[in-house]
Image 1: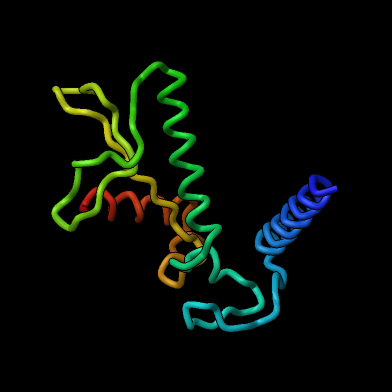
Image 2 (image 1 turned 120 degrees about the horizontal axis):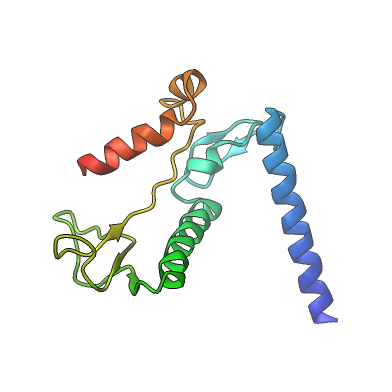
Length: 145
């Protein structure tokens, strides 16, 4: 009986996710306006959750992308580690992962996932003009860091 309950919860979560994704894609109302736990207002489109730092799905997407990269390297028989210890920038942040063995010129390959929000106020105009503009902007910012 407990398993059925869990499956029903998973189905309800999946249905909710699909409903919200379709609403975002079509530009329809996705939720009732309310205040987010971070204190910012959420309009009926519900797009704030895509970028909110306190959003669980945002962090989940980041983890899934890191897993995809790590598994791809593993499948290619390239040893890599996620969230490497001892490899940090000056600001205390570290890359999401790195190869264990040198990749090129005696240095390991490191990756750091960034998922830009094409609906963010500073991205909407550029994203409407050119496909991939938000990703290009994020890549430029990431490279400068």
